[in-house]
Length: 204
View 1 (spheres, rainbow, N blue to C red):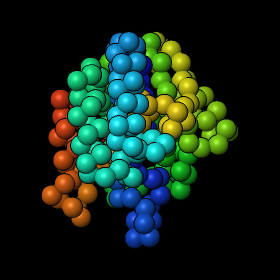
View 2 (view 1 turned 90 degrees about the vertical axis):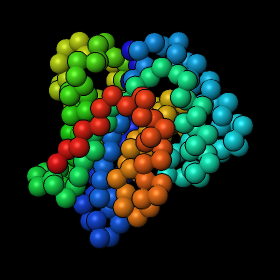
View 3 (view 1 turned 135 degrees about the vertical axis):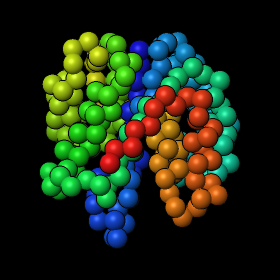
View 4 (view 1 turned 90 degrees about the horizontal axis):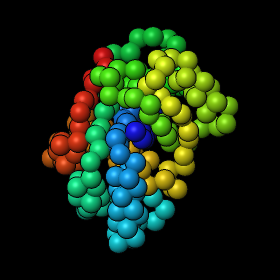
């Protein structure tokens, strides 16, 4: 089992100054490694065909590119689970003031409340952040997740990993569905993922 994790939004709480009102962390789950490889090849091919430089990122993609991306990945067998954090409902000073603790906590929560889906999963996480942050997160996850769920935790640079890009696009599609400024397109790409989504947990 291969699990890819990425987020959409930020860990800040200064909403009036530009912080996102929601934070989404999503995991894409492939139960078959060969299927994951096929999906990766298809994403790479789509990037060339669509002339996307470097990588697919939801927040930097046009509407047509988003449409094309989700059409390309739709035939492959994978599932998506996500937690959506409504920041206005978070009162813990630790979570509001410590960005690394905030991120670590919700990644752990996503993996812990998996409905017993994860078994011996090889987890890959978007490798943003410094080396010490990565070590702390890896150690944190291994301490927090019960034995047997996770076989390994690794970090990957998204521009070099097509499947991390898939996790980014999935997280972005879910996050977009919570925006109020463009209701016409808000849930457009989440609907394209509808058949893949196992669970979206609104954490309040």
